[in-house]
Amino acid sequence: MWPSLGERRLARQRGPAAGTIAATHVWKRFRADRGRRLLRDELQLLSARARGHGRGWRWALRDVDLAAEPGEAVGLVGSNGSGKSTLLKILTRVTYPHTGRVETAGRVGALIEVRAGIHGDLTGRENIKLYGTLLGLGRRQIRERFDEIVAFAELEDAIDRQVKYYSTGMQMRVGFAVAAFLEPDILLVDEVLAVGDATFQHRCLERMRTVLAQGTTLVFVSHDLAAVEATCSRGLWLRQGVVAADGPVREVVNAYRQSIELEAESTVQVSGDLRLLEIAIDPEAIDPEDPELLQDMVLAAVNEAIRSAQELAASRLGGISGLGAGGLGGLGLPGV
Image (cartoon, rainbow, N blue to C red; front, top):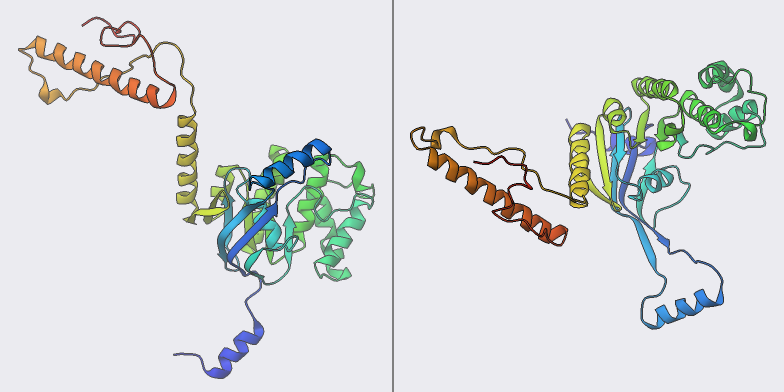
């Protein structure tokens, strides 16, 4: 049964449920670096402008869509510079898109940088209270969660020390503990967990699973693909600011892995002898009464392998000299 007109108006007034993320057709660009203010650099810039190659814009995100429902866990993967952190900053409204529409419903807790939301001149205790207030929590709510935050961050002996005297790992622990224990509707976590030790990383992942079970929406950016698969149900692969894949996390991560492997293979450097490791011949094609036929088949397979290697070398490495049908010694192939 379709909802009545009054029910639809009430739904629009209430808005989306807390924890909903809706980003559609998001574009973001940055102006190229200004560089040094030296006369030589200015002359080079003027020369480039005269040729029509002046300082322009670099697109960090291009037509990116991201939608997440309350309680959903989305993992963002991609190489450095693909736009993952930029997208998180747009979701937290640290920066704004050039074009597109971004809507988030509810409180947003973010750990994008190690000291994001943490003031170095304040103590750990003061930072927890300040961050909770910025999230819209009352003093009583912050006080009820304070001991849990301190215990999780393992900062009982340093909670009244200024944060600027904390190590990088300690700053990350207090930042994550505050972001995760103040019950945000949306939790955004960047790669900063990498600065923690293995034990604390495991505890962070367990905490993220706990907040997910409580209905918090998670957007997790990490180069640890195993952690992304274990934590998230959906994956989004960004490649040069464009969505390359969006779907079940295992499928997206596998596609990203294959892309990395293909890129690594295309840049591999080969030197020295080429060794033929294996020749596969269909057993049904072998005539046991004709050993010369088997020898001809082996030599044909070797020549085919040499030809393929030469074509590959010509396209990637500029050719391999001294390799031909008679160069079986360099292949490590015994005499036939």
